[in-house]
Length: 58
Image (cartoon, rainbow, N blue to C red; front, side, top):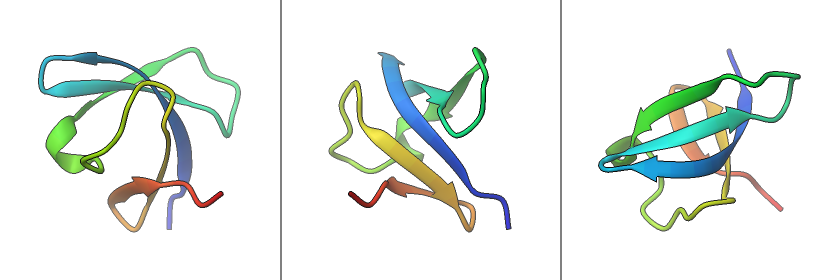
């Protein structure tokens, strides 16, 4: 199982730019907003696991 932590750094139409925060990386991942939680905003922290994106638990 692959688990990754991201932060939303911006939006580009129907896509969101995610930056990985659990490892050192400057790369951005472009993800369709339809795959992400509905209420995300810039700065939202997202957890990817089990092939799904969801809000990171606080």
